Image 1 (cartoon, protein in one colour):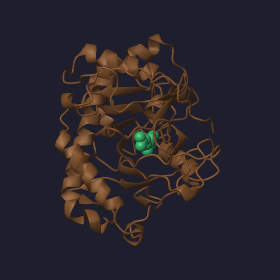
Image 2 (cartoon, helix red, strand yellow; image 1 turned 30 degrees about the vertical axis):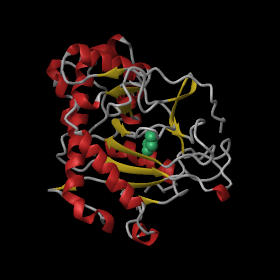
Image 3 (cartoon, protein in one colour; image 1 turned 90 degrees about the horizontal axis):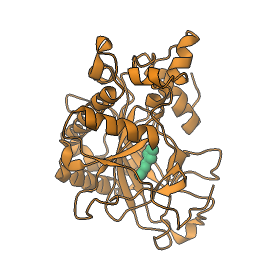
Image 4 (cartoon, helix red, strand yellow; image 1 turned 120 degrees about the horizontal axis):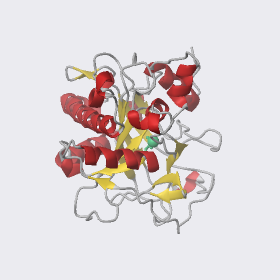
Length: 343
Ligand SMILES: O=C(O)CCC(=O)C(=O)O
Ligand SMILES: [Fe+2]
């Protein structure tokens, strides 16, 4: 694992206001996704309320502070739902000597406001609230996917701006996950060596798009662009008194679907060079949006992709007569991360 460089320049990821569903916004989103694979979206330009984000972080804090024995009752299983403990997940198995210095809780889909998995005691009273937050994340993803479809100039005859969103319509199960993350201060006796250990190993996300919520003063995310570059919580030009923008990134599935035009950029979480030894606690929240399981990853019928002559991913597979579903794509990626067998 490469040591973090305190001198690395912050990635210049654009910050976009998405209040208008117009072609200019769509083009800017597609450009950012094709260049960086990451884009900041102004929280105030979305329907997500900052009070709700802050309340979610309060709930997250309360859950992670609850006794281990309580959390263990909801341990993660092969359905990718539940609690994963410190060091149990290894996002970069080829380069890590031990697991990620983080714990997390994954919520799968809710049905009629009810979780389809055991809910920890600390969150039991908040089930419908959590479900509402999940819905607002999904709604934002749908809107962003419409903008991506517009920016890619998907053929009107095939569904135009609704081409992606129709495949994320919640008509059946999907791999979508709302994930709470906690990176505790690293205890002195943990033998943490920054060159060998990491909070979240280098990886790319698996789904279509990811929304990432970060907290002021809790830095640590880096993207692999021109070397490892830190991603600030408040990028240049966004006043630190404003809510941090939502960081949106492209996952492997959407990159595959678009023949690699939209980039699924490798990223990781470190103890920031500026932090004191062991760092501060970092809390973040991610919403990983996936198509419905049965969605076929056929080539996206896009004028822009045809112009770019994209031939990889879904385009290449289709020429070989091989079309996989969203569920098959996800299963392969999860098996690689958790060492789960493919059955
Ligand atoms: O906590 C973060 O900022 C990033 C988390 C992440 O990349 C992930 O869970 O996929
Ligand atoms: Fe990630």
